[in-house]
Figure 1: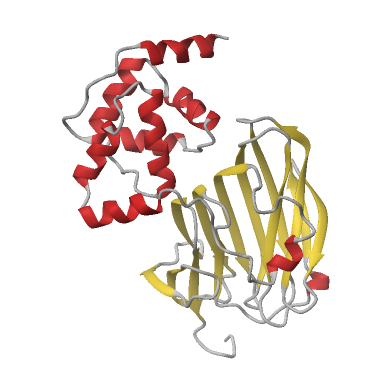
Figure 2 (figure 1 turned 120 degrees about the vertical axis):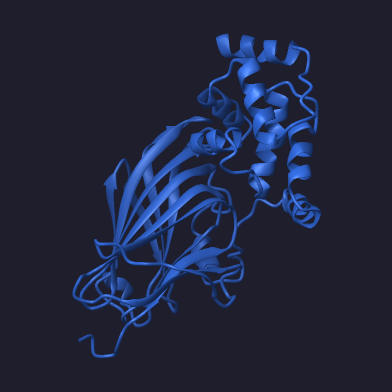
Length: 320
């Protein structure tokens, strides 16, 4: 009951007038005035079905980054209510700090919450066996994928560690989609559980190299609960690969992709790319450099749609 009483006190306070200054200074002053920790602030957002990481909230109030995605703008609207601010106080300060065209495009997309459209892809046939697959009831707080490229140049192992938060009561699972490389043998692909989950049903497409598996938590979450789990996909088959991509079916607060190469087969021309849809061509967005451990990575925040990935070339066709 303490939090409910505190929330009522916030609403009863005289709204703060922070129309001047910068967005970050106004947010920082409002948080200080209301006596809220960032963790409490995040909890209030979660009760409204909005997931924002502590690092993002900290970056916003210290000017290290600005909310700009549709999901972030939704969070800013909620923050005004939670902090007892006049409507459009923070939104207005953001608008002043951004070029008009950029702001208008962001505002027009702010009601869009769906990710990649799978309705016309082969995945749609597989997802028919999984009720409510269009809304998992989970927000992705963080997802970290580690892809190991073996000496045969195959993406033989994909390890994923996820932190999720429930948007509704009763959520107890998440779906995993997998697309194999050309000439892969799906009968040899293995989904395995590593931490806080177990593999449930697995469905394989009869004509395309696509699979869907459910990971069961064996515990029903309540709204606002978080869950940490880890799984692995092993695929010893398929042709040598020259890219790995991740599609955003639902919004993710933070996503990390890490590619680790066998030191005997190192690539060239490593780069990041994006695709707005599953069928769209790749658009190169930047060069990446291998580190001393023969790996490379990229980090994305507040992504709600599209696909991002890492691509590369092999120096020759013989592997020498």
